[in-house]
Length: 127
Image (tube, rainbow, N blue to C red; front, side, top):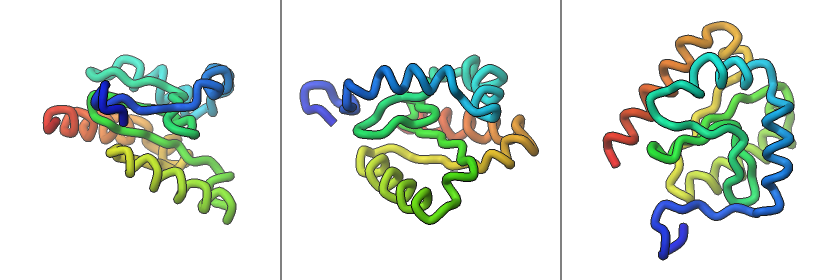
C-alpha cells in the first residue's frame, strides 16, 4: 500500500491490457455472476482487476474483498501452488480472498452471490 494514498493497491500497469482482454473472455460462471448479481450489488465490484502482479476475478474496494471463481486448472498441482502464492500475497495486502468452485456457482449462483454481497457489506461496515 502507498503511504500517500492509504488503501491504494499497487499493480503492474502492463497488466491492464490483459485484464481488459480477460473481461471479454470471462468464463460462463464469471459472466453470469457479474451480469446477474455483482454488477448491480449495493457495493461497487470490479472485474478482472490488476492487483500486484495478479489479475483477480472480482474486487470490492470498499470491503477489501477479492472473489475468485476456480475452474479445473486451479485443481492441478501447479494451479494449487499458484493459488496459494497468490492468496498469500493478496492477504498480505490486507485483502480477504473468497474462492468458489465453478460447480458451486453453477449449482446455486443465488446463494453464492448472496454470500459474497453479505460478506462485502459486513467488511465495508467494519472499516
